[in-house]
Image (tube, rainbow, N blue to C red; front, top):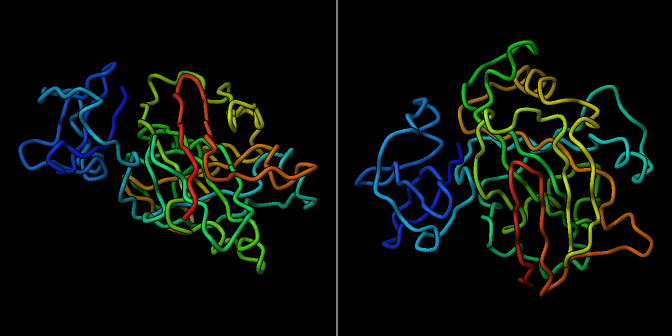
Length: 274
């Protein structure tokens, strides 16, 4: 099943089930929130008004997550290209919901930087909350997967040892297009994360290469903060980021960046200047 968040033609926010080019609107007359629906465990198989996908405006998969926990340095190729040492535990930083943009919406390069970089990633959306979740049960808490572009303002990211400033400019977190439930992703470890800039393949690595896999990340993150339905864990980016290429490659106005991971889908965002 594929679930999306969107604006109806009248501007009302809602959510629904994606069936080809049709959205089955599950929000009812007043609309609704996918995050809240996850908290009530759906249902997502019901009937609703059918809308042509082109008639609605997609929103980030979860437009209003309470927590976005991003994992840094989770592929050995990326650790190596940054010149860092692999640590015993993952680097964790946060994003804010107001940085998110949907599939098809532009990523915004801020005026204060020329070092605007791509980072294609898999996002895990929590369906069943919990605190101190055991690794063996971790996957029972997953509502599904989506795609993420953790676009990074590199100079601001490196003003000091904390990543937060470079990861939280408005319009820099591509998230979508759909939440894909685990039954459609039978072997998450074999899924390849690929990032293309203007059609050129720059990142390509399977999830099996994660240093800390998804069950570990759920266990680790839930050990220090309770996870709730709709919370997002962004699992890390492979090697091949633009900042570490020679010469560096940065996103600029007019570019088009695509994150692909089949069978989860394809996240496409143009790039524009602030």
